[in-house]
Length: 95
Picture 1 (tube, one colour):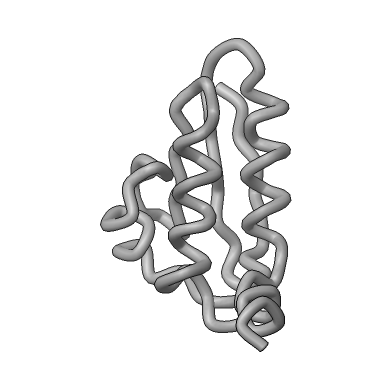
Picture 2 (spheres, one colour):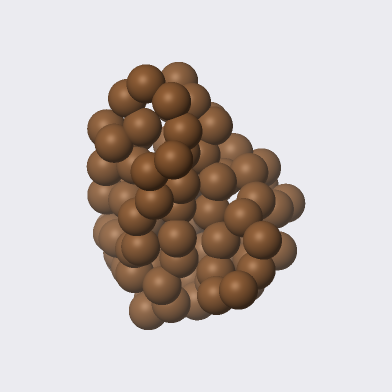
């Protein structure tokens, strides 16, 4: 199992649109990605309900994990999305 700690880049955290972007990214991967915060049990990162329930806020550190062939590349892709300020990107796209 490969794990990676990532600081949530979205200012408001993993709510609405930012969570949906993370979920879409995780769901597109060839292996299952799990995500957790603090001491909470990891949840399926491709589940919008599970990701929203984490309550991760901007600046929080989350742990992502994957197992199987290509797990490092998968975590690179998901970590890159988590670290971006998806709130700012969404505001720019709406303008």
